[in-house]
Image 1 (cartoon, rainbow, N blue to C red):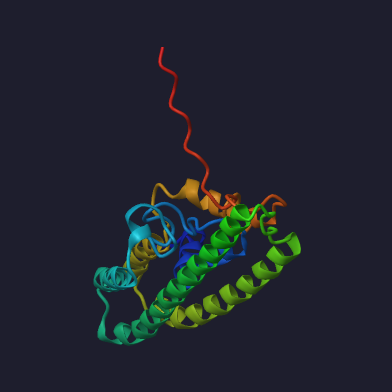
Image 2: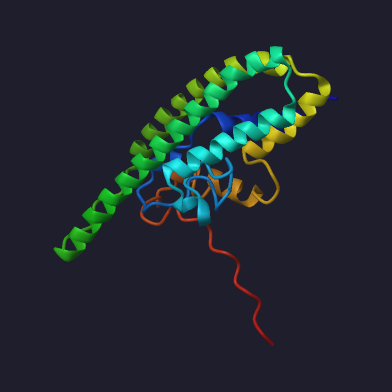
Length: 223
């Protein structure tokens, strides 16, 4: 069975690499991966229940996903040895995502406090990051993403090559879901790549409130 790379590769990218591009924006804390269990299945900042998860809750959830993937694939003893490095890469990504999440939260709290103090003192609000500053940070995160993906691929490739065609078909579904490729997330992936994500950061108006998700459509007027 031929596996569609257009589905698997983006899912692996989302799975292996912690999302941190939103740190470059000058706005208040916002979603880094979509609502609730959005892209990355809640591994980003998230909305809804996932937004309020403690690090311990996230760790349990992530461990459950790893166990689910392992069970679904029905690995042989030989494949299990190749799966172990993949698990290690996943856990490292989880830890980096958590650090990114905490750094983002602290930075936004500092910016919010500075803005509130400026308003209370009747002073001008702190300036937003310039486009050059945002591009610098985008470059840093792009380099980090490339390094993480390279490390993940080094562990994943030999494991994937050991799978049967049936297991590869299962892996496509499992990795797509773990990477946030399930149904219902297309709108938020488009948002992440434009208004609220790395592409949106290049807008000259990116700043406070710029990383908020697009508002839902207004309900139809009652007749």
